[in-house]
Image (cartoon, rainbow, N blue to C red):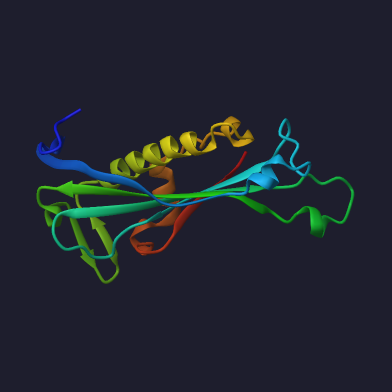
Length: 182
């Protein structure tokens, strides 16, 4: 791992990209422990819907770029022949949000911020999102230790497919999210 004051570099079309992680921190956390411990959830056959979202800046000053990441776990009750309207209600059991602050040597060289959205000039966004997902996954492991959710890690997310499906240029400062049932 590089020293805090040294920029990590990556080459893109013979152009060096200089970026480092400046700070990673938790911005919000909710867990419904009573629901997770209740008889409503059969932990051996639990059905969870997992949603992941990103919030990207629409403009920045300086050379810092912040990626906000959120994960939500919803419990989906199994259908057991009772009223489907009652059984199909999903209940939020966990929400965790983190923020990843990246520092570039010259941010405007890599991104441009326009009325219509964010332009990623060097295809760096997938790397930043993967790093953000990794840090979110680490926080999630720490926060769910000792609960039934520890058996339901954050699924692997194909960031390239995610970006194509959400059309990232239209989702700056919006919660672009993906959902996967577990």
